[in-house]
Length: 609
Image 1 (spheres, rainbow, N blue to C red):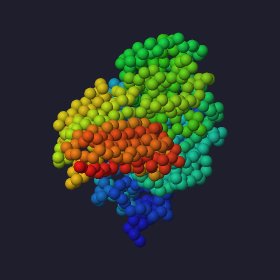
Image 2: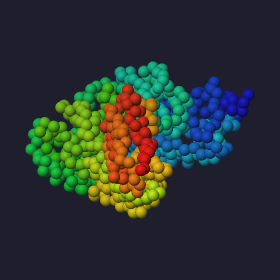
Image 3: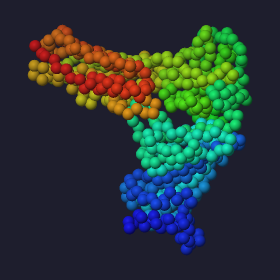
Image 4: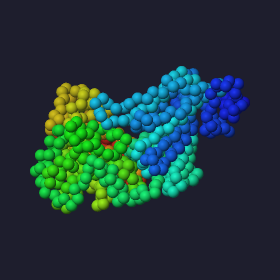
């Protein structure tokens, strides 16, 4: 019998209560029965989550949900001993209870985890009145690799949420087995539905899901982040009388805010664009956005007087304050909830306001619905950051409900020009200029302000060696100018010249063969175009290299090159039309990415006279 199986047998004897020679000895918890009849894996170089059971006791009229977590890890490492860390965030100091922590050592001994191994700390920053975020952190040192760590703890939420995405895949651990169970009163409707499960989750019944052999979550190209693609279960429950439609949610949203906000029903707009043009810059200058969650409510802003006194707030606070300012100037404005970014996973089939994570302002003007994000910078009235275009919004009250922010394309426009002369060895002395244009000017200005010389070295492909002569940025005009010596752009080969017509580095363009649960998610819409003008020292035949071009639903890639009067000219254009595509667009996306890769690898031979 292997030593690992012997240890497991010892553990099972202790679990059964037969190992009781020391009355003070710790014993494994009842839920450690998952070890029975199970061949344990060998210890690995990283920790492995062997078992997790999350039991959710849903709101039964007390306005609180309780989550009981039971977890067991096998400690991994490269040597004989290693460390173990686990973090758990929660809200409200009294909303966390540590129940038990035990160690099953490789020799079969069971020990309690010392209380000093758990540290509770506040994540609130000094000077912020309204943050109640806390962190529970377990730190165990000098653990023998192969030790099993058992943790059991409980946390509660003060606001009853009726739609809960519960992630069962992890970005750090592989997970062998995970159970999610939900408990509620018999008159509650409760369902658990797997999402992004890919066949690894089975349903025991409507209130019990089991996932097995979940690998460590890995980021895949163009599929979104962890919150978009990780395996999860959706717990959906309706207590008696709870809203069951988006219209009902809109009315409950209004009720939640009733203590700080009263809609101005029936008010007609008398405000002017001139008033907005003055108000928005002044508002941005006066009130500071602080990105923290607020109290246990999580969705209810502070009193207007408090926000004005401290002159800062989160998105809910600033939206409420801006609505008040707009109403004073004759606008019928309302705070609306939305989901940021727009491509974030959203479940319209589940009416639940807690799916939203951001608040902005909306109003009607000349029959048009306009929106403004008070946390943005230097946006005009009705201009929306691209991250919010196409996002769902929830308007409050009887006339409210679910709507969608319209698309208002604001692509990042990048213009690049390279002008220079080439010597007999093919070395280019030149100047390159990058010009940027977008309504999100402040964001681009910050990027240019933070540039350093190491960033400049990534502006050209690896095959081109660059020696910087001088460079400067102008954040006001959103330009970068670079004077440099470039080697590798043109290479003389006897009577021919080898020319790389697209020398500029392209952001990583990996293949995107596997869509995420919501299809493909690309970076923001962007148009990049430019020209190269190089004066050659050789007599070169006038010629035009046939243009390459691709136009499909994803975007456009085109390029053309010519030589005239010993001047080489290249032009190109690359554009992404939008940033989200359904899974059935996989082929078009692959073709688009392949066209960009082909352009970046393109070589052209020129003939000298």
